[in-house]
Image 1: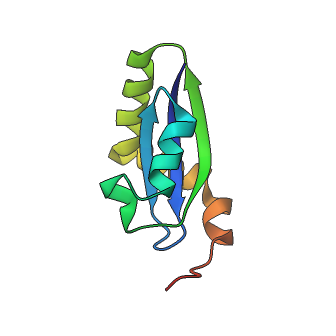
Image 2: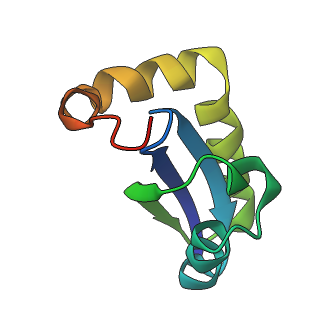
Length: 90
């Protein structure tokens, strides 16, 4: 199984989009600061996951969500999530 996941930074309220074949391990790496792109944006909250059988499909979806139209669609889809998050660490 392959996963496309979205993390929400509770520090700066920005999204991180990633893909992996081991979701639990990858999330632990993010939470423990072993991923450079999210190390200084912790704490993080897993807010969205999609599951794929094919790695090619997962990577294609990952690229789409990171692009302009995909990111815009995400912001619309996750609008309620954004409105409930506060900045507890700033």
